[in-house]
Length: 328
Image 1 (cartoon, rainbow, N blue to C red):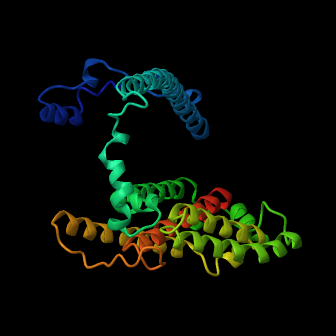
Image 2 (cartoon, one colour):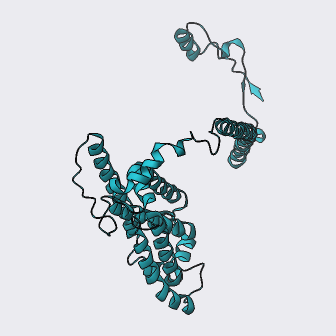
Image 3 (cartoon, rainbow, N blue to C red):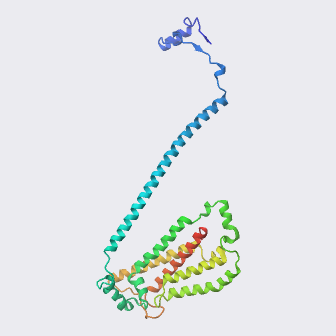
């Protein structure tokens, strides 16, 4: 329905509007005022529902487009990863084969293992290092920094395992905390195994004493820090399996592991840095070699063996605890 005001052109309001709009008036040009149909007006609830439906359809369309692009990106990345993996493997194989082609012939008299270096280790090793075991003298004196690098590799490997497998107590959910707190944290081994505990009471002290003997006697006989540390680590693991985490944590915790490993590596680095510095500058280090064949001989080799043994034992125990429950 529409209606027109007949006297609109003669009204004062029209003259005022013309004066304001400078003669422009839309209603004077014959535009009709239409009253909206009441049936065409949507209720508020229907209007809100219609807007919500339209918005949801737009979001679903956008999500479909995003998921398609994401799947396409994942397929491209997988294909790129496979191609690059194959190329990297072939590159490593080529470099290794190319290196092997330039190795000296086995048994040749001019090979590096037949020159004066090895003969010096054999003839002068006892006098220069004080170690009866020439292998220990070589790896902890002549090539001490090489052994230090191997110990650092063990420490870095344990740090990587910590970063990947350690379960932070603040981020544990309720079920995980409940599982880890029940039954003395003993989840995967038999609980209160009397046979294992009685055997451990006898074997663990013997294993620890034997490991200490191997570490301390490494410069006099076959052994040293690596083998002795492995024996010590196995003793700790046996004690853990027999008595659980709660008793083991009374003397070996994560804090003890960090301090022991860091202290051993720091002492090793400082001691051999001082030794190499004085040797390179033809200075007397002031560290006596002692009498060959006695326990307190060979200069720094004995304390370095102890440092290596501590690092190896702590690393073995850390690996086991992290793989078993994600922490110490």
